[in-house]
Image (cartoon, rainbow, N blue to C red; front, side):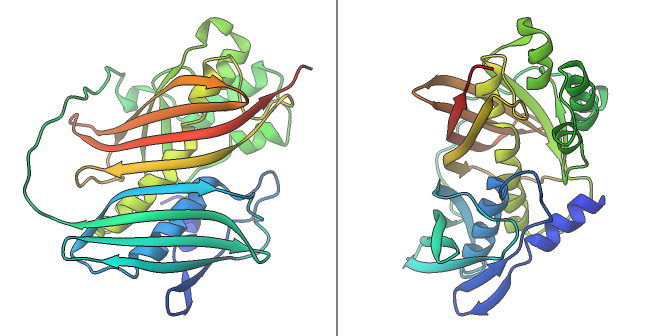
Length: 293
């Protein structure tokens, strides 16, 4: 287990300070605001700690309201909206400086039989073992694109998860515009033998879901984060969890951007197990502003 993953697991271990009130911290961060995937993951931990063990997360819907400050704790207030026979609903508000920075509704469902089908097909992609890790690809691409420290170092630093692009990395498209496309396929896994706790695997999938999704919008236009003319932030995020999965096994995150305009971009993704089973569906809209240099 690398140090970044150890720190992430520690960050996700929230402190309970009162009934249905939790406090979380952020890793030391000097380049950007609090990572959206971290806030979503922590909010899901807070919600899950108020739910019966026989219920599993099946969906979440979230809004990013204000940028998070990594220098101070985040307080998560959980509202017990519903405790039904089959479904449980929780609403979570993340607060900093006395204001909401994030809201999320999450729904939990007991396991029960039903109609089953899968129309989604996992894209063809090179095996993750045959692809260079993200940090190696981005370090080389940042150098070719002329990106200097501290952004180059931040983009290429160690991450909690091992991500491997089976398609171009956005920074590569800056150097070669012919690589621009509105689709991205990324293998990812957490390099550790994780506990069998289903909530933990869902929480870590939520964290990973925000790592590369909006990149797909930028890749369609030959743009990338870390360049001085690109600024943006996640606006909202939705996920549906279809079946059990493990994030310490390789999963393919197939992503596409069907539209962008009016300073916003839409991206959607599907997470497949290595055997091709659809495990998670994701949709996100982001604010993206690109200025002329």
